[in-house]
Amino acid sequence: MSIFPVCLLVCLLLVQVVAPETTERSEQRFREFVRQHIIEAMEPNNCTTVMANRNIKHKDGPKDKNTFIIGNENEVTAICHGQIEPKKTPSKKTFDVVVCVHTIKEHYEGTKKYYQIIEVECANNLPVHFYKQRRRNG
Ligand SMILES: *[C@@H]1O[C@H](CO)[C@@H](O)[C@H](O)[C@H]1NC(C)=O
Image 1 (cartoon, rainbow, N blue to C red):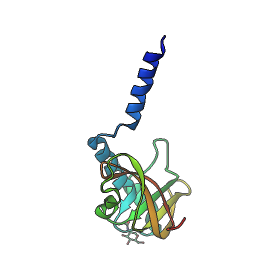
Image 2: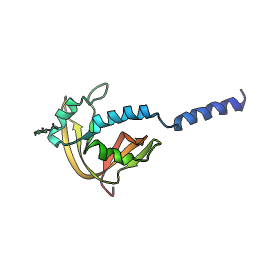
Image 3: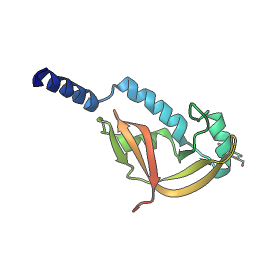
């Protein structure tokens, strides 16, 4: 096998990896992001109820941890304005969040964190994946 076909194959694979995702795919991931991570209002003691109501879990059981950003879709989506290529992006403004951690059975314990920077993956101007929350200078 000569070098050329191998290079061609590798190059095609690379193009596929860096190619932007379709807007349809981004919108689908965005709806999933909203379901799992955006809520207008909640308190730490709402974790068990909200995790159940929104049916947030892994295929094989409870999700260990889930963060809810307290806010509306517009202000969270604003983090990604102008960001077409899939890219990890920190928020400029801060958000309060509730972090729900799985305890036993279907139960979750919540902690509220104030003024957090949110790090999300943006694609096609939409937040499509939640990475983490952190303090402003952390
Ligand atoms: C959170 O719990 C309070 C009671 O502790 C309840 O009044 C409120 O409706 C709940 N909110 C959500 C989003 O479940």
